[in-house]
Length: 431
Image (cartoon, rainbow, N blue to C red; front, top):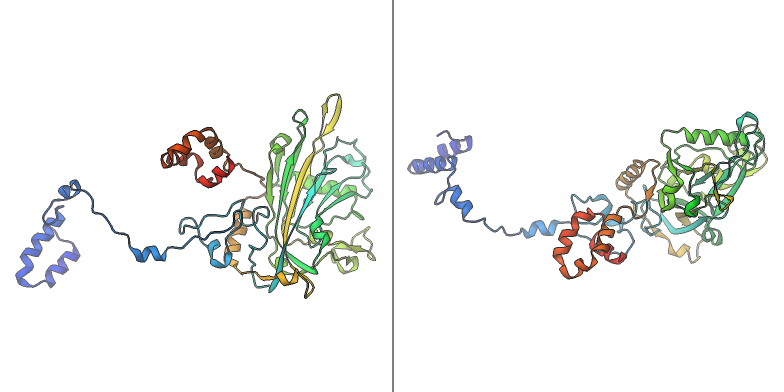
């Protein structure tokens, strides 16, 4: 029987008195036999029990206990690990940039920025955001019924602004409604950089009146919009550009009865690590892009308008198309509630209480790049709150009587239904 190269080399190097026995052993191996028992006999006799290698167990990455709803400490390297190579559970929510699920202290920066205080503020966009009926067409076919809401983590208390045409006349100035955070307005810092910004949207209109169209676009290019200088015709052109953008996503009013979420992500890494003065009023003459017809070069521009033209994080544009429904003999629009939560790393005056709470955020450029790429891959698609675990939670509710007494057997049967999205503890908390 032909020997392998390794067997031939071993036979050549063997002593003369053992060569015959070594050749017979190699022939038995190549024939599928082992000394003492054939391969079939060994398989029928059962498998050998393998002892765990304690050295390999000691080298495995460890998981850490953290408060519910908070991310792991990034300084321990958990963000650089993947479920395929570690036993660290993924954070809850919609990734690293989810400002609703993650604590403002659990952040990292792309480069070292020194000590800064993590802060968070919430803005509620509820009052006045009701879709309107289509207005009569003005000169040039201008239609003034749509509302454009732009959300962005600006270095100020204003975190969202609603833009709409003030009339059907193209040369009239647009109407702007500002939405600010009371926390950020009450105790504002000297300067800050954004770290996260997320928005949640829900249509709370009565069921019989639900309808209309909402378009969502995560913008990667700044725009010049001002409630003092922008004309109706310029805003109408921007709205039309959003409608025809390849990355825009369109939703019906009935799809938004459930709460949906969208996160901002980094669009300019250099600006995301540059501390900007809080609520700064910038002279128009210092900004080259304001040198256009109609902009007063002796005036000042607020921080939201300035950063909207040169954003550090992607602004989220939500375009509410004109729509009203006939309910009980009256025409009503669709009402939307939008919550915006923004997180910053801020500098406060030396010696103040908030200045003493400053931390040195860890730097993790590689991990942040992966999370940014993952978030960018979602495009302008809204994510439904609770959609990932609804199937598993529904099964658990309908079979709760079977899960409790059956113990491990019931969990083993339940596991394919949840598909790894909802573990046993989160489901038990929902019951």
